[in-house]
Image (cartoon, rainbow, N blue to C red; front, side, top):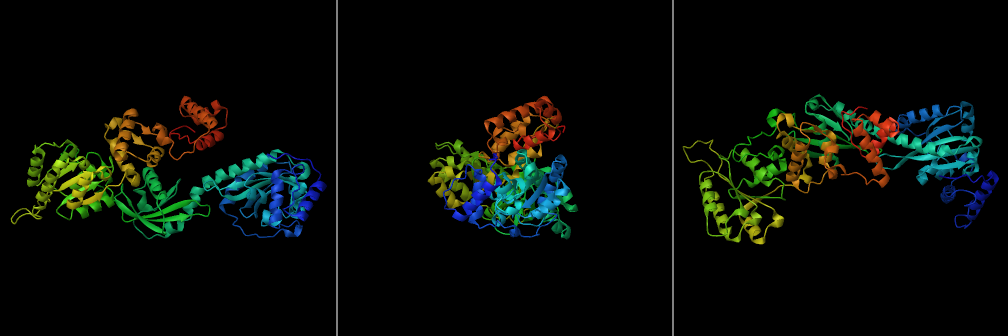
Amino acid sequence: MQNPRNVPDDALRAAREHLIRRGLRDGTQLAEIVSPDIEHSWRRSIGVEASARPEAFLFVNDFDPDGILIRAAKSVMDHWLQSLSGMGISLFLSDQSGQIIARRLGDKAHGNRFDEAYAAEGFNFSERSVGTNGLGTPIEGRQAVFVRGAEHFNEALSPLACAGAPIMHPVTRRVIGSISFACDTGLDNPLMLAMSREASSQIERRLLDLGSATGLALGMSQLRLSSSRAPVIMLDAQAVMTNISGLAVMSSELHTTLWEQLRGLEWTGAKQTIEIPSLNVDATVQRIDDSGGSSAFALELSRIPDAASIPRKVDADLPGTDSSGVGAAFPHVVRSAFDRAGQGPGAIAVCGQGGSGKLHHTLAWLNGQDSGPGPLILDACLLPEEKDASWFQAAREAIADGRSVILRHLEDLPRSELNRLKALDAAVRQQPEHPPAGQDRAAPSPARLVLTMNPEACPDFVSDVVSQIAARVTVPTLSETKERIPVLAAHFLDAAAPADRSTLSAVALQGLMRWRWPGNVAELRATLESLGRAHPGRVLQANDLPEHFRNTGRRTLSKLESLERDAIVAALEQSGGNRSVAAEALGMGRTTLYRRLRALGIETPEFMAP
């Protein structure tokens, strides 16, 4: 914080004029006369040739009286004006260019004084134009500053004392304006600097609250004018709007899924097409940016989802069915790759990392092919290295009976079994592509030979054979297709008995969506099953997730902040989730507690009392 030097105005003017005459190369030290912030501002003002003449103030008057900054600041300025009633302090708001866009006069009798100093809406107070002042200097210096009397660069402002602070966009942290408290020099108070900082923080919080509605409002006309009968959805991080057709498909889970999916896209054009696995539809997406740097998205679904479009569930007790739930989140791109690979008669190699669901995607695809009896599943790591060919004989018989064969973990195939693998491929290729004449034309498709493998772990002799006999299908990692997570998570939690079935809150689902998932689908399944056992029949909150999920995307807290966070969490637990009681126990106001909950990343259950 700056400390007043109690230097007479005449001495300040003399120091400033000396600096102007001698130029920026002058080595005169001003530390005994003005604070470093004022000296730096004077030097910046001289460097851009700002004017000290009263007539230098330009009347720009180019701003939107209903702009988001004015709307965010209105209630804050009105509150401070009421609190400071009778103290002769007025408030001024500027945009990022330094133009005054709003003011509140603490004493209307002083209106003429401010008018004489050009401190009115529409006038430019940028530091580049009129030098050091309580609106333009915080913008240039990106910090709060107190400017008294002749510390102002322009003489017209010398009767005033002004404390100002920059206003940052709550997301991008770019300076978008400033707020200043001003009064006659005889009425200034050191607390005005702290007041300007607090007012700036309050406006930034209001901007955060208004940002959601603003981002969506940018696309309201598109939503209203859309003639599509299919669902049209608009959303940002905090809110969602939809037409009538979209009401049937919208939910908090879908909002979380779509937001996480869309915010991670790389945008090279105005529109993109995405797949929404939980609805089994495609959507055309347009990104909408507001002037503050926030984003919203408009989606138009390809059609209205119906019950028939949802991937069918299979009976987990039947052989060869997909009991993992991965089939319910079978990505369209993977399904298409299977279909292309299946156009030929030979083997299919399903490649992917461990735990990515290679087996389960294979089962889902075979189940959709109406390929007859459930497949024979063999594990390459269990095949004998001796001449015992029982596994090979079993596979030959299965193929002869029209039953597909899945050979897992091909990276562990012994070299001695390569010829038998080739022989199985030959047996599959020799099958008739269509049922013989006179046979039911609705008979199952020919048997398939499917090989699942992790290419990174495959020896060269295995990779060489696979490249000769098989068409490849690549299964993406879970981190690459996070849109599958809600469907998978619901399936894994559904495995519990109805009374013990847990569900995910929106904030908990968001935590899952932001995790890296190095163990892929297998890690997700283990995580959800563990949570279901630990919290049966509950709505799972973010605080129920393991610590590494809760820390995803959160800044590192200082030791003091960590202690504060622990104290707040303990108070909430002791109060049974009643935030008013917790705030009283902590000795802080309820509004302050809400602010600290957000700042420290403490997620609270939706059912908690306010």
